[in-house]
Structure formats: structure tokens, C-alpha cells
Amino acid sequence: MLQAIGLTSTPRRNRPPAVDDLTFEARPGQVTALLGPAGAGKTTTLRLMLGLERGRGVTYFRGRPLHRVAHPPREIGVLLGDVPGHPARTVRGQLRMVCAVAGVPTSRADDLIDAVGLEGLADQRLGALSRGMDRRLGIAAALLGDPHALVLDEPAAGLPPQEAAWLHGVLRTHAARGGTVLYTTADTKEAARTADHVVAIRAGRLVADQDAAAFARTRLRPRVAVRTPHAARLAAQLTREARAARRSVEAVAERGGLLYVYGSDCAEVGETAFRHGILLHRLTEETGPAPEPASTPESRTCGPEAAAHAAPVRPVPRAARRRGGRRRRGPLRPLRYELRRLTGVPSTALALGGTVAGSAVLAVLLGRLAATPPPVAVAAWPELLPLPPAALGAGLVGALSFGDEYRYPVLPTALGAAPRRLGLLLAKLAVTGVTALLLAVVVAVVDLEALRLVYGGALIPVPADWPSLCAGWLALVVGCGWAGLLAAGVFRATAAGIVAVLAVPVVVAPTVEGALLGPAVRAVAGLPARLRELAWPRWPHEADRWLDGALGVVAQPVGVALGLSLTALLCAFLFTGLRRDARW
Image (cartoon, rainbow, N blue to C red; front, side):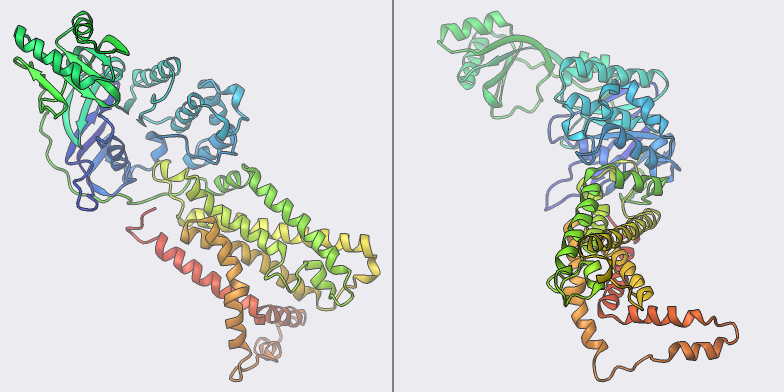
């Protein structure tokens, strides 16, 4: 059972709250429709229930608030709007990634692909799906954790009748198994036809809370729908004739030349239009919601009005106030999630492949110059570039790691899984670090082989300080990958991560170089010998060479600048991401 008590959104810019003290419940074994026109606060209500928006009130999911549910995807499935995800990701890849968020086996994705009728589109890109197939994918994602409750925001909007009937059949099946279903809609007839219980709201306040039969009996009335370019004129004529005949007729004009006439039929409306020469584009009888008791300037009423009253609402005591955004969780399997996120889109392969190819071409061009040192040629790092291609590529991969989380947000809609959790951060750092290491090794090997192929092996000698050069190379590429990742996580944009990587050699390194080479700087020469004296006789002789190499790497202005940048970005990430009231 879902119990929403006292939901109130935070007002903005001196406007009334979109949802004001709303209380209702959705029972298990039933399909509950949250009905209201556009702007009534339906979506805001769902976001308040799920803790995705700040506000007051509390929502209980089978007696527990959401932040006390151990595994939210196994308690409630959500579909808010279109399916979030990278448009280049496949249907199977998207569902398998969400499986890692929910902590369920990967085989569950394949089972649901067959269950929702997407077996022929498993390798289709998300950006190429039709609206009906997108809705089927959204239902599959909501059902991945086998939840007790389903919460959907206008799932049938824009669907053809056949797809809408299939979707409501799935909701009905879930409710028949003892589950709870809550969906929003603006179509009154859809709510009365497909739901067991209807909760109607307007301007964020409760209007009706009753079963579908009572709702249809008290709030739906036969009416004539007329579309004409002279709606106001026809409404005036219908009102005048009804008043003369002492009949109760109400004409309500809507936008687009649409007129709803209550208390009449097609024959009377058509004859009135014919007598007064009024052109009609549409004339049909239907069943629709009763007009609001308070008449607008566009509506005219004659005769006594048969007002429809909602069933009485059982009073519910106010709940304790709460703020949204509390206790956000990351994916239950963050490492698997990050691996699927990285390998599930072609942009990663394009970035890595382009980096290797560009670095090889640049290395060959640099090798033509006799004055180019061999390490510079192998790294493909000319003076004109602030960083070598491998470091820029690693920074781009790191920036996309967090940038895609905010551009194509999958986690915020996955019930409490937030992109800025410590476990997910560690998984991203690990995956990005390993990817950067592999990229650095592959680039170095490919560049070296390209130089040997073009110019011969004699022109590429092995330098004596190759261990320190290799350590510095690996540290530079991995550090740039981490810098791009942390900056994109702090500023929530891929471009910010790339800018942060470029700022290290352009802005931070010159400042550090001035500090390191200043007249008041003391040298650390002889540090290995002094450490040997303290640790003798257990100090290994090989450690002197490795320590000298490490000191040489750290003493480089770019290395110090990169270390300082990583420290500052990590502190900013932890401060903005782990504080209590951080909004994701």
C-alpha cells in the first residue's frame, strides 16, 4: 500500500505550492489513477513521494518511508516520462545496466525483454525507438526488481489505442497479483475505464477520492463536443434558446475553437447552428467530466445546475514534516554498473581509438625532427600542445564518466540511486584508472612501433632513466583521467571535466613552477641516502633508484600541479556530494 500524507511542495518565486497538503492512498490489488489537468501537480506529487523534490509530508510504502527501504528497486518500480538513457545505448545494454543498479541478475533483463515484446529490438539503439517501444522499455525497467508497487507518470500519453490497451493490461496483471499500481493521467475517461480507484486533484489540492464506479456516476456527464471557429457565438445562441425554453443547458468554451455542451444532444446543437449560419467542423456526443462549479468567463449557464459532488474524504492526521533528497544510495553493484556504462556506448571506443591513432600520427611527425628527444616522440607531446593526446583522451573518458550521469540521468530515477555516492565514486575511479593505464601502455607501444617501422630501431634508443619516465607517463595519464572525472562530478558537466584537465598545464603548472623554482626553495637531494641510514640494514639498494625516480616525477611542475588539482577536486566533490542536504 502507498500512503501519501500531507504532501506539500516548496513554493518558488512567491507562487503558491504546486502541491498543497495532499493526502491519499493507493491500495494493493488495485489500479489507482491520479487524475488532473495539465499543471494540476501530478508529476510534482510523484516526485515528492519518491523524494526527488524538496517538500513536506511523508509517503509510506507498505508502512515504511522510502529512505528506510533496504532495496528500493525491489519495493517500487518507477517510470517518469521517457526512458532515461544514452540514445546510443542498446535496449539490452540499458536494461543490464539498470540490473546492476537494482542488484538483480543480468538474466532478468533478457526475461523482461521477451515479456514486454521487445525480443526483436534488443540490439536497437534507444534513440531509434518509437514512443510505444520506449514505453515498453520503461515498463521493463520498472519491473526489473520485481517490485510490489508501480508508479508511472502518464504512461499512456501519446500512445496509439493498441499500445495503450497493452500497457493497461500489464498494469492490471500486476495489480491482480497483489501489487499496487499508481499512475497519473489527464484523461477522465481513461481513468474511469482503466482504474479501480480515482484520486482527482486540481491546483495541487484533492478534489475527489473514490472508486471508479462512483467517480463515473458523480463526476462524468454526457456532453456534446463541438469544434467551430465561432464557439462564443454558438454558446450564446444555445444559452439564449435554453433560457427561453426553461431548460438546463451549459456551454463551456475551450481553447482551439472547442465547445462542450452539457444538457443537450447533437440534433439540437446542429439545428441551432444551422438556423444561425454557424459553421461546424465537428459534432459528436461523448462522456466527459462535469464542468467546475465556479464558472469561468468563457462559460455560460442557464437553468438550475446539477452539481456533482465527490465522495467524502476520510480525514488523515498530518504527518511529520520531511525534506526530500535524504539518504541517497548508489547502485547496489557499482563496479558492474560502471563497466556496463563505459562499454555500452560507442563514444568510449571512438575516444580511445581516436586517441591511439592521433598519437601515432603525431609521434611519426615528431620523429622527423632530429632535435626531438626520443621520449618526447614516443609520448607524442610537442611543445605546442599543453598535454599529450593520451592524457587528453584519458581526461575525456573520465569527464564522460560523470558527464553522462547528468546529461542522460539513469540513477536519479532509479529510486534513491544517486550519481554522487562514495561507492560509485570509488568504482568510477577504479575503472577510469585502469582504462587510463591501458591507454597509456597501448599508446606508448603503438607510438614506439610506429617510430621503429618508419625510421628504424636504431633511432629510438632506450634512455637510462626509463623507469622514472614510465612512472611519470603512467601517473600523468591516470591523473588526467581522474581530474576529468572529479571535475565533471563537481560541476555536473563533461565540458567542465575537459576544462579542468587543460587547466592543469595552462594555469596551475606555471604557478607551481614559480613556487618550485623560486630563490627560497630548498632541495631534497640526498633523501634516499638519509632514509637508508634510518632504515639500515633493511633498506634495499634497488629502492634508491626507484625513490629517485619518484622524486623526479613529483618534482615536475605538471606533476605537482596535477596532484594539487586532484586534491582540490576530491575535497570539493566530498564536500558538495556527501553533505546531508546535498541535492542530486
